[in-house]
Image (cartoon, rainbow, N blue to C red; front, side):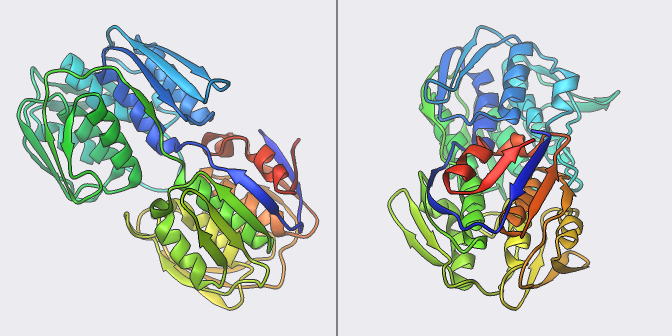
Length: 418
């Protein structure tokens, strides 16, 4: 979608079903490089990023087919993998770099372009490189490519200076076939890490501690093909909760894992929203409005940085003044300028946004800078008076939200692609 038109100020109500996790699916699809034969992954969201990683696998020599009609399933046949990843695809999406670990483990040589993705701040690959070097790889950067070589990876202790999700996943995948035991210290603990570990363990890996600061991987000689279902997308769930709440609506959010969105729900309850947690669903009501809160983004289990822009939109209509502090990415307030154009009162001070709630937002032509900023602007447009035109030249929103327009329409939103 290049442009989205929203006729806002309409209360959302009904129910919506959450898709599979984009970030979990990307890592799991990269990990299929480790598995010979046919592997089937279900509940994979139909997104641009997913299509990109599938094309990467295809260019690496795997046969990969996606079927949205068959429970959003990707079928992968792996009869061997090439060691060079395609430049034009990896530079489009940062998560494509994850293939370096499994390619190195399978082939002993990997040549991967330096990655691209959203311009939300510095996200170097040095932690990935440091982790692979700890396992015995020799790594160099030449002409925009990261080249890693290892006659045989060997388990060792890997300490991550920052609990990076991508680096944790890269090392975990590479270590699955390394000789001996690997211990990842200061590992990321996001649910997507646990999902990747569960997938690999089902295939025969020996991984313990996923979701904690220390992950242990006992290397095995080979893995086996499996069938696996991806977890629901916790960021999509949080985004829809806010979309309903900002319109003072009421809805049932279906297919969630409650503990995955605990930090978000905790903050939402502080604003005064009525939230009822069910076994796999959540009911949210904002009929009585909502008030300001302060929050700080942190690695899991702290408040997720991927929900911060959406909260900027939501809190712009809260009663009182909120302070949002960003500690993960240094350039993640890119939606603020556009929100100001809609009448939001937001002041930036260093890595904090001071948001004073206003009575209403007004429509305006606005532009999307990155994936989560795009979601934030859609949320703002749903609450704004008049018609908001959102320009998304680089299809950022399509990278992370499956059937967004269709799902919002099912809740009563007046939204369309133009």
